[in-house]
Amino acid sequence: MQSSIFSRWSLIACAAASLALPPVMAAELGEMAVLSHVGQPLLAEIELTALAPEEAKGVAVRLASPDVYRGGGIGMDQALQTLTISPLERGGRQYVRVATRQAIQAGHVHLYLLLGN
Image (cartoon, rainbow, N blue to C red; front, side):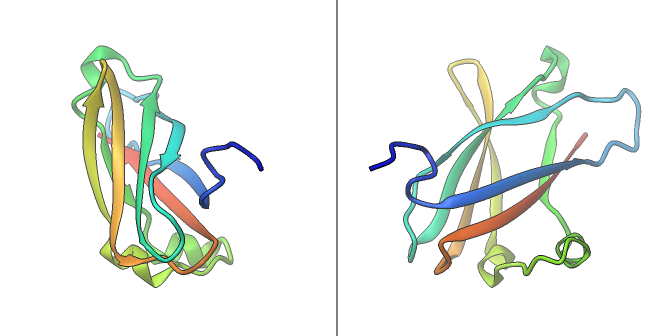
């Protein structure tokens, strides 16, 4: 049996930078821990990396628009319409917690996030 953070779900996270205002930030998505199972609401934590100290509190993370999904030829899971994204700090590291109120029935979910300031 494979012991990976993806053994419960194959959650694909992609980030597109939405950085219209200088200074340019260099935030990146790091490791992800999926804390839920298929048939449950999504609960995952994604580390934000490559943050300068002054950027740590100012990074906004939001779900990409349905147009991004359509442009990629990917269906957007309906449960993502109930997605909440919350900042989280633990051990001096920055994370975002993503959660849905509706259960995810699929074995994988495409999650496109926009990072900005």
